[in-house]
Amino acid sequence: MTDKMSNVTNDRRWLAMILLCLGELMIVLDTTIVNVALPSIREDLQFSESALAWVVNAYMLTFGGFLLLGGRLGDLYGHKKLFLIGLVLFTLASLACGVATTQGFLITARAVQGMGGAVVSAVALSLMMDLFTEPAERAKAMGVYGFVCAGGGSVGVLLGGLLTSTLSWHWNFLVNIPVGIAVYLLSARLLPAIHKPPAHPSLDVAGALTVTGSLLLAVYAIVNGNEAGWTSLQTLGLLAVAAVLMAAFILIESRIAAPLMPLGLFRHRNLSVSNLIGVLWAAAMFAWFFLSALYMQLVLAYTPMQVGLAFLPANLIMAAFSLGLSAKLVMRYGIRNCITVGMLLVTIGLALFIRAPVEGSFVIDVLPSMLLLGVGAGMALNPVLLAAMGDVAPSESGLASGVVNTSFMMGGALGLAILASLAGSRTSEMLAGGADQLAALTGGYQAAFVVGSIFGAVAVLASALLLKPVAMPTDADPHGAAPTPATGPAKDAA
Image 1: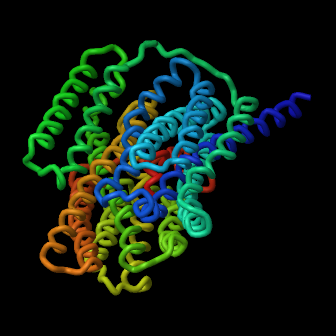
Image 2 (image 1 turned 135 degrees about the horizontal axis):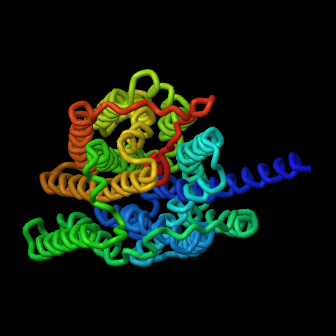
Image 3 (image 1 turned 60 degrees about the vertical axis):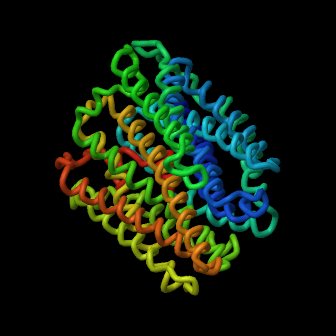
């Protein structure tokens, strides 16, 4: 009788695990599925190229800004309750995105989506910790979760291409609604309602507001820098206010008992370096996904479905690494070497796009970059998280992971804002100089990829010169899944 009850309990846990993965899959899909639809959204709602970045940035900023706060709210009020609230928020915001007919309405809805996605992602891992307490089972569950995060990128690019080509870009958001409703109804019944109040039951609202406000203003200033002027009162004023808010955030975090981001964590060298690498990696990779999709559709005249298929090799490679290749490489060659080589391949992949011509071909001008970016990102991503947590106490590992994931999202938002503005500025210059539309667009993308490659090169140097050797993980499962997965925003870039 005891064995039978144990089997039933085990089955229920894995059903709950599937629901958590489906919830996270929606978040992953929403990143890649939207990127494929960006040119269609631009044409339909008359976005400028720099303003179009806000369709991505609004989501990334609120996601990154509320990721740590979402986890803290789960600790205070219960992980199951917050998971369900996040699902509702994300699903309703998806509906709003799907019926949007103006730029402002879509961007606002995307920001709300980011908040809901942050809550879902932040508490999903905590719920898995509640469900699986044995190290081997937990490692297996984390491997499955990491695969969903990576594999979701592949599903997203294909589904985004299919929906945009056969229906419209609106359906890229509306597809979330039936999934969100089903996951909510099943989660309400199957997820455990375990609640362990933290030692310091306080909420760092001031920290969340100041850091999110700072980054929002900084990205807004950068995105609008071309139109307002880089030395204008608006641009310089917004950047100054952003700096003041960031200073206020640091001051708040240094003084309160339960900070959103404990500054003492950054005394750990590898955590600090991993955050730097995460910011640079995300700045380059988010811009690659955004700008290469525009290049393929606006310059090479690919259909949305063809763009989805073009991204498929990179996403499949990253999914394969998450299933065990990354962990095996780490065990054999070490964390630092994997990050350095992986980031080097990413940098080369980005650099190849610098020469992408107006009359480009997929096999010569697109596929090599996609393959290098897939291998490099797949090799480096999990080790970045492992390096961040290699010299922190086990009780701080979840927070360390959250801090790095937040750096990924913020780096992606800021990097995309900078490179999209750079591309738009270079395109305008070339048009003013008499270049035709396709040549000017290509020149803008090439200029942005130069800077993206520099971001990648700095990340290579940081990993090779600044990271300390890290002890190898010992609790990976027999199939090679890493004990700590790359989750949430880091994998959403795929």
